[in-house]
Length: 171
Image (cartoon, rainbow, N blue to C red; front, side, top):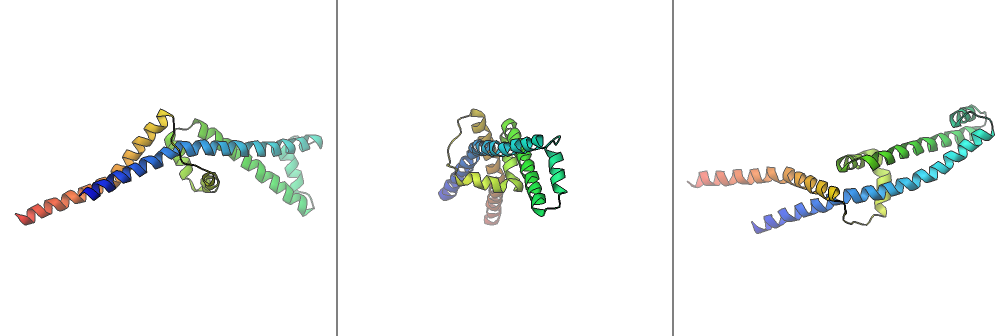
């Protein structure tokens, strides 16, 4: 019985520590995205400068013209530029989303399979720590307690049921 209580406390502590990492990972991820957006913004600015220099109304008009070029190298380059533009736009949206979202929305964002590659890059450099914001600590505590109860209530119910069965059989 003592071992079960010890395991019980260890599971809760592990859940709490894990949930406390969400705001810290979010901060690291936002820093990573800021760097990515800055780097791709430099590329997008260069594309806009090329479009302006060569008389195109915007970048998309330039890319459309490049994609119809006879030379496969030029078409591939246009496709690459289009991919960079799309990645830049998606990173800007993710950055705006993470800056304004709450703890649960951030956790849900990271749970999406589309984020795994970039998240794994962030986690490679990540050092676990504790958040300083009271809101983050409160959200982590509520989430940990909820997950803990979801995990342990069925086990407690089964244990209670077994005790009742034993009492019925012994009387």
